[in-house]
Amino acid sequence: MLSAKESNLQGKLAGATAVTTAKGVRWRWKYETAVASSRDLRLDFLRGLSLFVMLMDHIGVFGPDSWVYFLTARGEFYISAAEGFVIISGFILGIVYFKVIEKEGLRVASTKILKRALKIYWLAVGLTLFFVLLANYSPLQLWADRQWSQITDPIDLLLGTLTMRFAYHGSSILFMYVLFLAISPLILFLLQEGKAKHVLIVSWVIWFANMYYPSNFSLPFASNFPLASWQALFVTAMVMGYHRQAIANFFSAKGNLYRYYSMAIGAMSVMLVSLYIAEINGGVETIFGSIDVHFYIADMHDKALLPPERIFAIFVIFQGLFLAATWLWKLLQPVLGWLLIPIGEVSLYSFAMHLVIIVIFYNIPGVRDLPYFFYGFALLASVLLLWGMVKTKFLFSIIPH
Image (cartoon, rainbow, N blue to C red; front, top):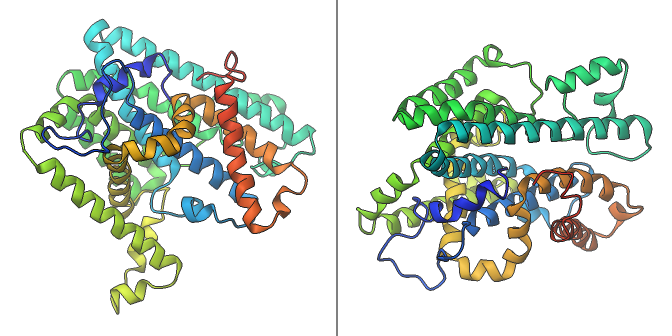
């Protein structure tokens, strides 16, 4: 959720990461960084994809079934749009602020990050209070349960929101991101001091301990996801973004290793998708026979604690999507890029407005009574509405982007 001004550095820097095409490997459809471009469009494409899936699945919480959910899995796959969003945000932050530190120093980088965090904080506060007012003083159907927002003590509600102990209607993920940004200057300082291993060890020790002693890691902040678990995704992605050149140099020095790595990630991604298809069709026993794997599959669905099985699936599938965007870019970009890239370029605005679009969609008379086939197109129309808001810069002067 970096600003457009900050993320304009990402293309030149991300072009040399572990997920870019290895030198010497030619592929007619692969992504090529334009010299004049200052953005890595693959990252914007994947952020736009995350927002597309997020909008479809969030509308689907209180909606009928649709053929669209064959594409998005309705939030029940082994990786969610929220996880992809957090990973990309951390990765881009590491890329962008590495360069800012090089040019302007850690103090300037830290100031910019904290200013960004403050903007997102006020956006989360504003969205929470806006939807609370809708819940209490309008008949509109909302995404969140009205019981969460009953105003009994307005002062307590206001103070709870300002202290990030209360969030409503999807705003909690913004508060989570504010907290991640708040610790980012410290992480950047440690990375600058060559302490990447220490950062990763601390992050993953917290993740591990939270799986077994979650009550000891609960924080008094509103969040749909445990911060102690999800910080591992953000921090790891941030470290990788910061050290993108070292990762790129590693692959460049290993000849065809990147090609073999891509093939392995692709094969494992196909296996996980196949497992999910077998699971929803009751065919897991056909694959594994008498071996009981239901415990491990259940762990892959746990997007709160993020057990090792889900972490593995997240790593594989996200890499698979990134590699697909890399190797098949000239096929994907003309078909989907016009829709997903603009949405991904202003991800903070898109996230905020997708919460509004959910309310608009729920309150269109008869929309959820449409036949199965047509309801799917109504869902896609909601994405076009978001795209139209982005292209016309609707409320850009008010909502951070």
